[in-house]
Length: 89
Picture (cartoon, rainbow, N blue to C red):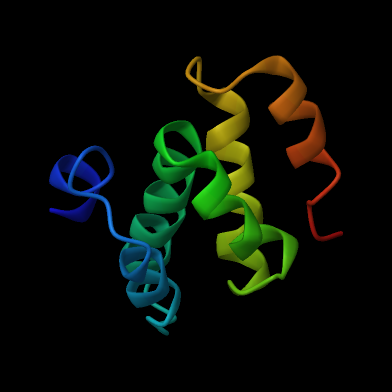
């Protein structure tokens, strides 16, 4: 719901906080969080970026969100270059 309906006009900065607060070791939960942030980077880049810069997600989800963002055609090349530097190694 958040990805489909609340990343455009109805976006509220509290939504990424809600998603980032979810903690789970379940693969599909972590993948959903990663997809949310990858999509948020495409639609609300300035609001989503601090979650990666501040490492507010677990390392796997953090890196998966970056991977999915790098695969996106909706993110500018210069943004992708910056995101590459945020990967947790």
